[in-house]
Image (cartoon, rainbow, N blue to C red):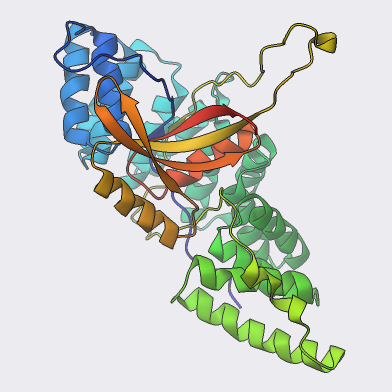
Length: 397
């Protein structure tokens, strides 16, 4: 059987740390560029691009020559489906700061959407080569996508492998490795890669399906059942769910023959709840972009050492949440949450007080144990939503 033909897509997303109480309300005397940019970014995070453009344009007028404002404007125009204006602001950002890998990656995505594959390749490669790029795995993945889109899977493979080497939690990179390995008839290596994909991103329905089928073919029936039984939850009423169901019926028959009865434990996969960092992937057409720009904000992972701790060891551990905000309309937040729940994510809506916007609502995912996992989840969410996810560090309970 041929491997699944649909690929994952990441859209441009700008990761921001959640900052409480640092902005003043609209109409307050603080009309600095920094304040206007902060409010604009919050509207951008909520997917309110018209308001985001209003504040970011005012910020640009007050502080011309700031590459981060130009980059924010580019993201806002890209969300508004105005790529020409997005390119204009990306070009401004790169004129001011030539070594700006996030902008280069975003530029590459727009070129790719236009079918300009060579300029896209050059932009992604330059971003990948920047030693200060915080998420080079995204550029590596994008390069792999370009080669695969051209029908050159063997050239794509080392870029997917590089992405997985940079970030071992990058589920989509592992899935892409598995897909290419399967095309090359290297099924053992494909199964290994799919196994890593479902471990890191349990909500990847295609990875669960392919891992389940290859495990069935390898006579690893327990692993096959675990993965196949997840597919219907992640992607109900789809061809993938129907195919998984057919294999489950085969496995039930084989289990009954070999054990004398259908053991109850074989359906444990259906009883499991999906992890909070599950990823549900959507299908894409050839006209869509490969993954876009991700600007991961730096987060200090170290807890302050307390007096009396031996050798400066941490006295408190930390975890990471991923949040999508800031929605001024709770009903809209609940609607976005419901859509994400249907795709296999575990999410909750939380109320926040913001000095700039008043009461806002954020959609919260997690917690997860490491910044790397949070960054991966944030990246995955970028392919499902229009708003911009953020990473929040919280004490572990």
